[in-house]
Length: 133
Image (cartoon, rainbow, N blue to C red; front, side):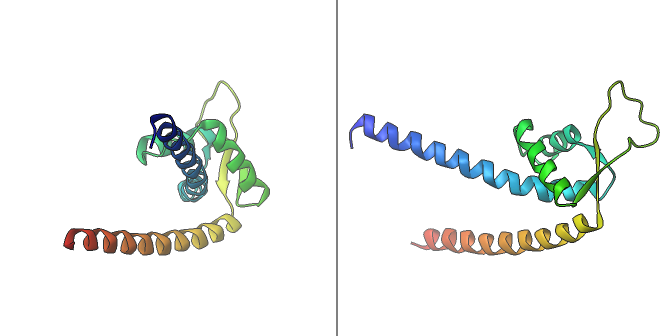
Protein backbone atom coordinates (compact mmCIF):
# COMPACT_ATOMS: atom_id res chain seq x y z
CA UNK A 1 0.00 0.00 0.00
CA UNK A 2 1.44 3.39 -0.91
CA UNK A 3 2.07 5.94 1.83
CA UNK A 4 -0.46 8.55 0.66
CA UNK A 5 -3.26 5.99 0.41
CA UNK A 6 -2.39 4.55 3.82
CA UNK A 7 -2.43 8.06 5.34
CA UNK A 8 -5.87 8.76 3.81
CA UNK A 9 -7.24 5.48 5.16
CA UNK A 10 -5.90 6.26 8.63
CA UNK A 11 -7.32 9.78 8.48
CA UNK A 12 -10.75 8.44 7.46
CA UNK A 13 -10.64 5.92 10.31
CA UNK A 14 -9.85 8.73 12.77
CA UNK A 15 -12.79 10.79 11.45
CA UNK A 16 -15.16 7.84 11.75
CA UNK A 17 -13.93 7.04 15.26
CA UNK A 18 -14.40 10.67 16.26
CA UNK A 19 -17.98 10.65 14.91
CA UNK A 20 -18.72 7.40 16.74
CA UNK A 21 -17.34 8.84 19.99
CA UNK A 22 -19.50 11.96 19.58
CA UNK A 23 -22.68 9.88 19.20
CA UNK A 24 -21.70 7.62 22.09
CA UNK A 25 -21.05 10.62 24.34
CA UNK A 26 -24.44 12.15 23.54
CA UNK A 27 -26.17 8.98 24.70
CA UNK A 28 -24.00 8.77 27.78
CA UNK A 29 -24.64 12.46 28.51
CA UNK A 30 -28.39 11.84 28.73
CA UNK A 31 -27.89 8.85 31.03
CA UNK A 32 -25.37 10.61 33.29
CA UNK A 33 -27.24 13.93 33.40
CA UNK A 34 -30.47 12.22 34.46
CA UNK A 35 -28.60 10.20 37.09
CA UNK A 36 -26.84 13.31 38.40
CA UNK A 37 -30.09 15.26 38.54
CA UNK A 38 -31.65 12.64 40.83
CA UNK A 39 -29.36 14.01 43.56
CA UNK A 40 -30.25 17.70 43.23
CA UNK A 41 -30.78 20.39 40.57
CA UNK A 42 -27.71 21.40 38.56
CA UNK A 43 -27.01 23.94 35.86
CA UNK A 44 -25.63 22.91 32.49
CA UNK A 45 -21.99 23.74 33.11
CA UNK A 46 -22.03 21.77 36.38
CA UNK A 47 -23.20 18.68 34.51
CA UNK A 48 -20.55 19.17 31.84
CA UNK A 49 -17.84 19.74 34.45
CA UNK A 50 -18.89 16.74 36.55
CA UNK A 51 -18.67 14.41 33.57
CA UNK A 52 -15.19 15.60 32.65
CA UNK A 53 -13.75 15.63 36.16
CA UNK A 54 -15.42 12.59 37.70
CA UNK A 55 -16.18 10.30 34.77
CA UNK A 56 -13.36 11.19 32.40
CA UNK A 57 -15.87 11.88 29.63
CA UNK A 58 -14.82 14.94 27.67
CA UNK A 59 -17.73 16.48 25.82
CA UNK A 60 -17.71 19.73 23.89
CA UNK A 61 -19.76 22.09 26.06
CA UNK A 62 -21.62 23.30 22.98
CA UNK A 63 -22.78 19.72 22.35
CA UNK A 64 -24.20 19.32 25.85
CA UNK A 65 -26.82 22.06 25.61
CA UNK A 66 -28.77 20.54 22.68
CA UNK A 67 -29.03 17.32 24.70
CA UNK A 68 -30.40 19.26 27.68
CA UNK A 69 -32.81 21.11 25.39
CA UNK A 70 -34.03 17.82 23.91
CA UNK A 71 -34.57 16.42 27.42
CA UNK A 72 -36.49 19.58 28.36
CA UNK A 73 -38.79 19.20 25.34
CA UNK A 74 -39.32 15.52 26.18
CA UNK A 75 -40.23 16.55 29.76
CA UNK A 76 -37.45 14.44 31.28
CA UNK A 77 -36.08 17.53 33.00
CA UNK A 78 -37.47 20.94 33.90
CA UNK A 79 -36.04 24.35 34.68
CA UNK A 80 -36.17 25.28 38.35
CA UNK A 81 -35.24 28.21 40.55
CA UNK A 82 -31.71 28.47 41.90
CA UNK A 83 -31.40 26.32 45.02
CA UNK A 84 -31.74 28.23 48.31
CA UNK A 85 -28.49 29.71 49.55
CA UNK A 86 -26.92 30.14 46.11
CA UNK A 87 -25.79 33.65 45.43
CA UNK A 88 -24.96 34.18 41.80
CA UNK A 89 -23.92 37.20 39.84
CA UNK A 90 -25.73 36.00 36.75
CA UNK A 91 -28.90 34.00 36.30
CA UNK A 92 -28.29 30.33 35.60
CA UNK A 93 -30.72 27.76 34.32
CA UNK A 94 -30.96 24.98 36.84
CA UNK A 95 -32.41 21.67 35.77
CA UNK A 96 -34.22 19.07 37.85
CA UNK A 97 -35.37 15.61 36.87
CA UNK A 98 -39.12 15.02 36.43
CA UNK A 99 -41.15 11.86 37.05
CA UNK A 100 -40.95 11.16 33.31
CA UNK A 101 -37.20 11.66 33.55
CA UNK A 102 -36.97 9.13 36.39
CA UNK A 103 -38.87 6.62 34.25
CA UNK A 104 -36.60 7.38 31.29
CA UNK A 105 -33.53 6.95 33.51
CA UNK A 106 -34.74 3.53 34.66
CA UNK A 107 -35.25 2.42 31.05
CA UNK A 108 -31.93 3.65 29.67
CA UNK A 109 -30.03 2.54 32.77
CA UNK A 110 -31.38 -0.98 32.27
CA UNK A 111 -30.49 -0.87 28.59
CA UNK A 112 -27.01 0.41 29.41
CA UNK A 113 -26.32 -2.40 31.91
CA UNK A 114 -27.63 -5.05 29.51
CA UNK A 115 -25.51 -3.74 26.64
CA UNK A 116 -22.48 -3.31 28.87
CA UNK A 117 -22.78 -6.88 30.12
CA UNK A 118 -23.18 -8.24 26.60
CA UNK A 119 -20.28 -6.22 25.23
CA UNK A 120 -18.06 -7.24 28.16
CA UNK A 121 -18.86 -10.91 27.53
CA UNK A 122 -18.13 -10.51 23.84
CA UNK A 123 -14.85 -8.70 24.40
CA UNK A 124 -13.72 -11.10 27.14
CA UNK A 125 -14.56 -14.08 24.93
CA UNK A 126 -12.58 -12.60 22.04
CA UNK A 127 -9.66 -11.78 24.35
CA UNK A 128 -9.62 -15.27 25.88
CA UNK A 129 -9.82 -16.85 22.41
CA UNK A 130 -6.83 -14.77 21.23
CA UNK A 131 -4.80 -15.71 24.33
CA UNK A 132 -5.38 -19.43 23.72
CA UNK A 133 -4.29 -19.33 20.08
